[in-house]
Amino acid sequence: MDRKQFLSRSLKAGLGALVAGPVILQATGCNSTEGGEAKSEDGGPVLPPLVMAQLPLPYAFDALEPHIDARTMEIHYGKHHAAYVKNVMEAVAEEGITASSEADFLSRISAYSTKARNNGGGAWNHTFFWQVMRPALSGVEGQIAPQGKVLDAINASFGSFEKFQEVFTDAAMKRFGSGWAWLVEKDGKLEIGSTPNQDNPLMDVSDFKGTPLLGLDVWEHAYYLNYQNKRNEYVGAWWNLVNWEEVAKRMG
Ligand code: MN3
Image 1: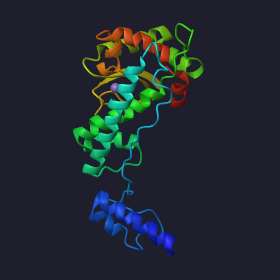
Image 2: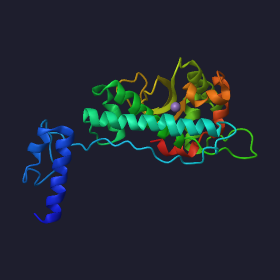
Image 3: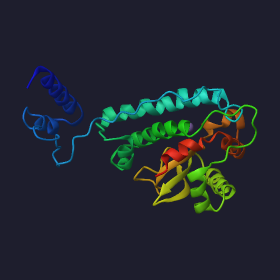
Image 4: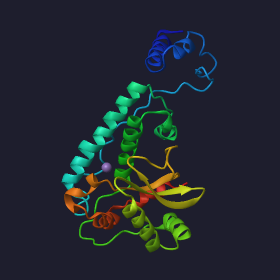
């Protein structure tokens, strides 16, 4: 092997040793990866360490005003979300978490600690939440309704957009304490539900499962500065921020 290959393999071996101990060291002997992917002891692929990063917010802190204020966004993104990302990466180091993707990790969350579950969920949920919102339109009151295949799917599953909003708002209002309301796609149909804490519909431990299309954070930290205890006003205002194009992208 040439020098580049050698360095690459040495690096992989070192990384393997870091996350999975002697099992990987054995598998990365100089010739054992010839002719295919490295295999773990049980014959499955050797997965890389999980990396969850905090992506830049896709708009300015004040872009969601007046519906969600800039100060709330600064704290929510800069403190809460940042802490979830930092803490899940601590859990990755402490528990040697490896995964082929974030979704893969979440689908096996029951194998890991409460710290991994709460912070892994928190990291994923907030990245998702920022993406399914878009800047408030200045000078335009009222909501932008979904169109095309999203509207068709909503009509097919709930009867009308108004009925869909009613059911989603109900899920958001009835989630006791902290958690999330979700619109998911499951077996070609749309469903609405909610999860406690930072759980989400991708987690094996969740009672409510599916492919998330839309999510709403109903933790008090998401609205308390501006709305205090009036979760209903926050939910009502949030409809002005839904990015239906992002919802459409996530549909199968
Ligand atoms: Mn939050």
